Length: 436
Image (cartoon, rainbow, N blue to C red; front, side):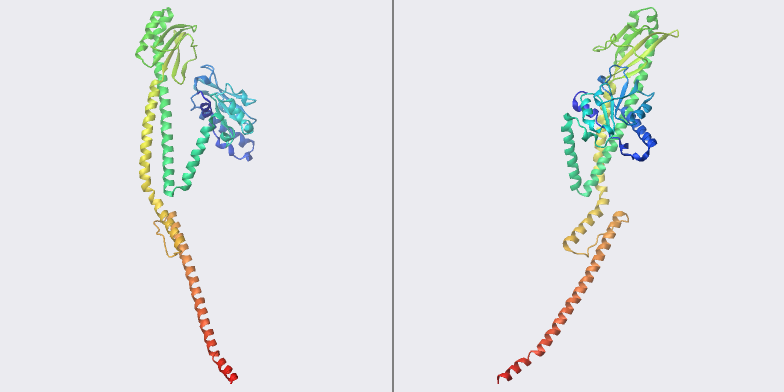
């Protein structure tokens, strides 16, 4: 996978969710934690298809490298002991530093190597190495410079999604959640079917090539025994009927090339291909099956059959197209159905929001929301109505008290005015007497 961004994407961190487990477990708890991490990493790597340049040769082991002083190295060594990745053996190497990463297929950086994340990702730049970090912010703390624009664009998209989610109505939010959940579920289901289809095809292809190799090997025993190259070539020439067969190589018991078949336009050279152990070797574009040939209980030679994977690739492309159509149709159907059914939930909530808005603007506490059920939304509406009723009762009580106070004040004012009117006429008469 050439290119620094491709290398980074291949090495994007798997933030191991078990990293936040409590350190108070003690030694036994820590050991179990790292065993789970190691098993998770091993199973995840089985879904990775390594490019041809990731290994020195077809028999090279798949190397898991660790950096950091933690129990993960021992746990990984225990988990991978005796296991294989296809036909490749697995080995675990503890590195003194991330600069020694060349030759690794998987690189694990412990939490203690946090300061060297940048150095580690610089070391794996342009290399097909799956890089795994143990901290929650592995990608942000250690980054591949050439992929900053990609990460920046992702942050922009995430910000737009968060803004949409904050400003959107509850109906749009629920519709969005339903669509995303449906899309995720359908995508995972299609991915699982694709993985199953790929595994099934590989198994069928291996069985077919094995049967073909056994048949050709049995027919070639006489040619090997009598050193008859021409008859061996004629036998291999029958592979022209199998369009997916790229080449076939027949070897004698010393491992030397005895006869070969090449499909028109094929570029495989049997002379440069070394004889391997029995079994199928899958690469990105082809599969090679090695089979020994026995005669009288002794090894008389071996045969290697190379087939392309065009049928598998065409099948996967067709399956991907069908999956895309199914996902699109399902999402559209989900949108139309959910946009109507979701009103059963959003209708009462929107009604409640409208009543609350009118109460706030008009100060009219006599308004009431209509409850539509006994669920949580119904309970919320009933509680809201009870709150309005209590506020209305208190408001009425306050208004009554206010009216009584005003009435008392008016009555008191009238009585005071009457008393003043009764005393004021006597003053002018007294003043008149004084004048005369």
